[in-house]
Image 1 (cartoon, each protein chain N blue to C red):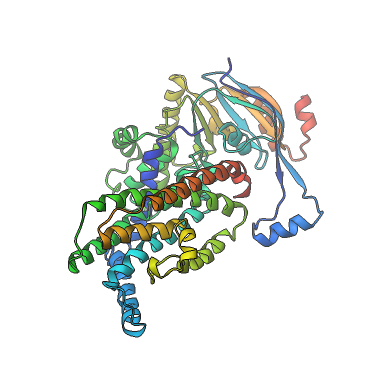
Image 2 (cartoon, each protein chain N blue to C red):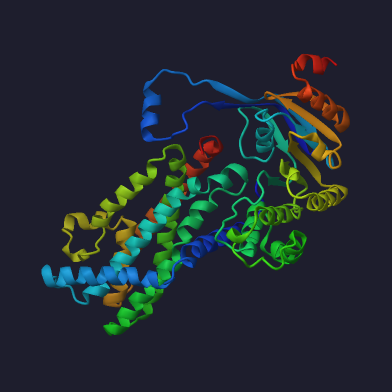
Length: 253
Length: 254
C-alpha cells in the first residue's frame, strides 16, 4: 500500500502537466485566451450574420456554453488516457492509481480559469452586470468536476483493457456537443425533451450559468438537485468500476 | 510476529496478445483457444524478520521482480497469502516519473512525491539530496541538459533518502553509477540498515549486495531453490551461473 501524500502528489502531477504544456510555447498562457477568442469570432459571424440569430449578447451567450463543453472534453479525454499514459508509474510504483485520472481532470482547470476570465471580460464589456447569484457558480462547477472525475475514473480503467476506449470517448464528445445548448438556448428545446435535458450535467452547467449571468437569478433548485444526483452517481459508479478493474492493471498495461 | 510472511504464493500470467483492442477481445470471446499460462512464481514461501537484509538472486526472468511486485502490493498472487506488517518503500525504477522538460528540482519533488515523501519531508530534505547528488549548480536546469550520470545521481540521491517506511524493496539499482558515488550510496544503505530498516534487494549479480545483505534467497524459474546465509547461497548461485553445462539438481544437492 502506498502511504504517500496524495494531495501533494496530485499537485505535483498537475504542475508537471502545466509546465510541460506551457514551457515550450512562445505565447504561453496567451493561447488559452486566443483559442476561444478565434472560435467566438468566427461562430459569432456565422450565427449573427448568416443565420441571423436573435439571441442578445451572442458572443457571451456562446462562450458560456462553449467553455464548459471544451473543459468537459479536454478533461474527460485526459482522464481517460491518464492510466495508460502513466504506464511506467503504474507498473513500477505503488502510487494510488486514482490520482492519475483526478490529476488529468484538474490539470485542465487553470486553462479553464483563464477562459472564464474572458467571460468576465465580456460581462463587463456588455454591461450585463454581476449579482450575488454569481456565488452559485463555484458550487455548480464543483459538481461538474465531481461528475467528470467519476466518468474519467471509469473510462480510464476500461481504457487499460480496451485501448480503443479513448476513440469511443472522443466520438461521444462529438455527439454530446449537439446535446448541449451551446448555439441554441434552452427555450428553443421542445417541452417534451426539456426535463431529460436537465439530467445532462454539461447542459445543466450551461443552463445554470446562463440563468446566473443573463437573468441575475439563482439556478433552479430542481436543476441543481438533478446535477448533484448525476454527479455523485457518476462519482460512486466511477470509483466502483475503478476499484474493480485496477486489480488487473499490472498485467494488462 | 514476522514483518513479512508469504505462504505458497503463485503468480500466473495469461499469455494474451500485446494489443488490447476491442477486436482482440471480441476474437477471444468467440475462440475456444486457451492461452498458454506462464508461471512467474510457483509456491514461493518467505518469512522476513524486522531488520533483515535479504538479497533475491536469480537469472533474468526468474521471477525476482514479480516477487518484489507482490510484496509491494502491485499485484495480487493467484494463490497463496501475503502479509506485510509495515509501510513499504518500493524502488523498482530509479527516477520513476522523471520528465526531460522539467528541471532537476521539479523532478526531485515529483519523484519524491511518487516514492511516498510528504510535502514537508521532501521540502526539508531537498537541500541534502541535491548536495548528495553533487548537482547544486545544475539543479534548476531542465533534465534534458543532464548527462546520463547526472540523472542517475539525482535519482539515486532521492532513492537513498527514502527512509520513511520500515521496509525497502529495491530492484537492481545498486549496480550503476561510478565507484565513488556507489560507495556513498552503500554507506547510506548501511546507515538505514543500522537504524533498523528491513531491506529486500533484487540482483542477478550477488557481488553488488555483499556488504548490505546478510541473507539470500535464490529464485529459479519461479521457484525458490535456496534460502540461507548470504555467502553460502550466493556462492552456490555464482557456481551455478558460471558452470557451462549447469544442472540445477546438482547444485541444490551439493
